[in-house]
Each structure stands twice: as structure tokens, then as C-alpha cells.
Length: 418
Ligand code: NAD
Image (tube, rainbow, N blue to C red; front, top):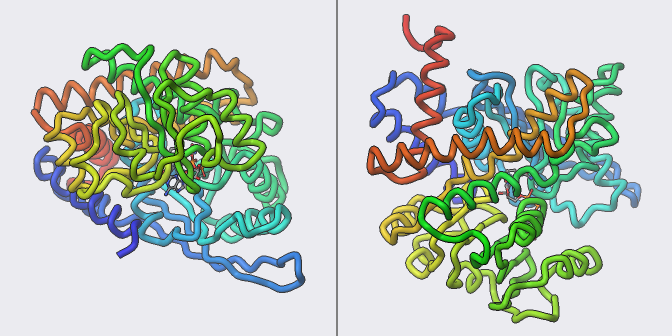
């Protein structure tokens, strides 16, 4: 079973349980168990050596009760349909949890190892993907964004291709763009900043001083790398980080600005000299205040969960904890900040980018960051309070908050009752 299939199954199971427990109209499940539309495309790409290679791409439009479908595009060798479906379902919940973000849930993916492509091949693949799905997306229909192994440059190629197809400037089709073509200030760090706001609030709720708290981060890409910078700047002590090549640890705190420079130069942090080399497995089990998994799904499992010593888990990644692990961690009294709220900063600022794009505004970064705080922290507190009140896990609480809102909106739109 692929990691994506596992994530899809556990997400669906929890949705079903939450619908039953909430007592909302059971028909809500009919709208949640499968996406509204699944698009599978074949993308032929001319390679630099003159051959043509084709790649499989997906766009999954899960639910648009609240507004246009919204969700990132992942380039990864293990990307498959079930993974994209699972991630699209989580997006539907994420946008439902945050009030004032009028989007539904979607996700995209291409099965490819982008590290094996040249820049020009990557550009042709990105443009080919958008061409292949162009009929199904739109600035008021489905608005993609970056995810694993995609970045502002790739978003720029995609926005450019879409505008070319439409014969007019429609850069609002995509978020996470470079500032020069209508990106928002603060978008690159938005997911990590949201993660930090949530982690700070979690510390406050259980009486940990965020400043000086010990933080472990898995993954050093857009989410993990920026989380390391922001946590460090806010006074936390980042003691361990990792990427796909390996992990490093320094109990006295890593020199994050130096590490960022090192990563830029060598393309990995795993060989950074001023720290002890450890494995990714060891990293997850380190004693710390905050563990932030910011890589891929199913990293915390029933095997390693009993050995996890963090006090707070702030899920930067989507689906990093399996359902079995979730139970073990809750029993251990670890405060889990689930993905659907902890990493929602990206979609919040994507929304702000979309608004700025539609109205041709350019807001100051402070305005964007303040708006992000206003949207994410109260939503997190609501989930925490609901979990306390109902004596349920944080993930169950988050799912219930999202599902309740979706059920209400589906009812108002006439999707449920006769
Ligand atoms: P990215 O491609 O920028 O970075 C991924 C990082 O994870 C890289 O450092 C990579 O080396 C590392 N990695 C991969 N496999 C690993 C492994 N087995 N062990 C340790 N490290 C590993 O991707 P990203 O955009 O930072 O996304 C990371 C996670 O955050 C994903 O789950 C994604 O869905 C989620 N997310 C991203 C955003 C966003 O705005 N980019 C928003 C919300 C959620």
C-alpha cells in the first residue's frame, strides 16, 4: 500500500467517525469520501537529449462548497492518485477550519523526480502540466500553488503559460508566485510563520516558554528551512534539523544563519560540520519541547511513536502522523497541533495573494503577517477549546470544526436536504 493510500484511508476513516459523532447530516460523507473531479493527464516532455519522455500528472478537485478549489502541486517520484486525493481532502478541511478563507480543497501532483531534470526540462514539464489541466482550472474555479519540490519560479512558468493560453494576463490563476509577477510579500515564509504562531500559542497553553524552547525540525525545504529561520529569530533554540540526505544535531543550538548559507552552497545540511550527524529516525526521537515534522507523510508511526519525547508536535507537513501513532502520542499527553491548522499559513497567505492579484494591490509584509496571525491563531484556539470541552484529540477536534462548517454551508447551498 502506498504512503498516499494509507493517508487517504485514515483521512476518510476519521472524517466518517467525525460526521457520525457530530450528528450532522450523514450525506456530508457522500461529498467528502471522493473528490468531485479527478483529472489524470499524460505530459510528454522534450528532453535535452532530443528524446521525448512522458510523465503522469494529476489534479484533484475535492470540494468547492466554500469557494474555488485550492491546493498545491507536488513534484515527487512517489506522487500517486491516492496521495493527491488525500492531500486534496485535507485542503478541504483546512480551508473550512480557517474562517474568512473562501476556498474549497484541491491538490495537484506529477510523478517525477525533478532532481533528475535540467532547468529547461523542468520548465517544459511545468508548462506542459498547466497546458494539460488548463481547461479545468480558473481564477474563480481552481487556483494551484506550490508544494513539495515546486517553488515560486515554477509558479511563474505556470502563470505565464496559463496567461498565454488565455491570451490575457491571468496571473491570479496561481499563488506562491514571485513578487515581480504579483506574488504576495510574506508568502514564501507563510506556512512556516503560521506554524510558528501555532507553536507559540501551544507553548503558552501548556506553560512552556517559547523563547529558549528546544526545537527539532524534520525537512529543510520551504516549510522546514523557513521554520528554522523564524523559530531561531523568535528566540527558540533549534537543536536538530534534517533533509532527505540525513540529520544533524547540536544540543547547544544550531547556528541557523550559517546553516542556511551552507545549505545554499552544498544543497544539503546533512554534511554540515559544526554538529553531530544522526539519522532521521534518531532526530524524531530526540528530547525536545517542539517537534516539527516538515517533510512528508507517515513519518511518525506506531513503531517510533512510543519513543517520541517532544512535548508539542507542530505538523508543518501534511499527514506526518499515522492514525495509530496519533493515539499513542495523545495517550502520552503530547500536544498535537494537527496539519490542517498548523500548516494552514500557506493557504491563508495564498488567499491574501489572490485578493491582492484580483485588485492589483501590493500590501506591506507587516499587513500580511498580521492578517495571517488574526486568521490562524483564533482558529487554533477554537480547536484546542473544542478538544478540551469534548475530551477528544486535537486532530479529531480540528476535523470536527471543519466538517461542521462544511455541513452548514452545504445545507445553505441546498446540497443536503430535499
Ligand atoms: P520542499 O520540497 O520545499 O521540502 C521538503 C524537504 O523535506 C526537503 O528538505 C527534503 O530534503 C526533505 N525530505 C524529503 N524526504 C525526507 C525524509 N524522508 N526525511 C527527512 N527529510 C526529508 O517541500 P515543502 O514545500 O517544504 O513541503 C514539506 C511539507 O509541507 C509537505 O508535506 C507539504 O505538503 C507541506 N506543506 C507545504 C506548504 C507550502 O506552502 N510549501 C504548505 C502547507 C503544507
